[in-house]
Amino acid sequence: MAEEEKAPPPESWPEHLSELGDRQLSQLAIDYQWLDEEASPEKSGEEFHRRREAVIAECERRGMFSLAESCRKPSVKQHTR
Image (cartoon, rainbow, N blue to C red; front, top):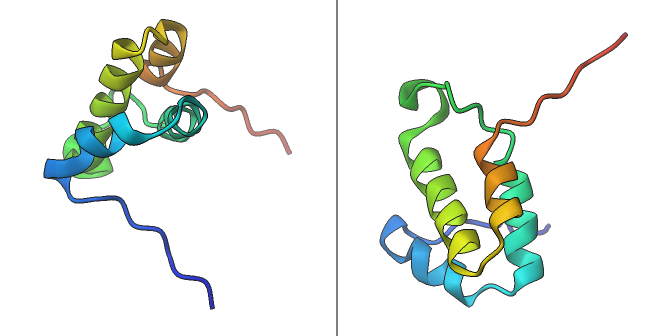
């Protein structure tokens, strides 16, 4: 049985992000993109918001501004049946 991946504790999250390669950071930013800006912390998790903001800050620190901007905007997916 495969072990579930867990994010590092909140206090080491920025350090963890700085250790990631550009490709890993890009994938993480894409994963965090789905979160709606308007979602309340109670609904989506305050910690999730903080981690997403840290991902955006790390992207900006590396000069990956378009990736930071796409992570900042919620992903809009239309479901058709």
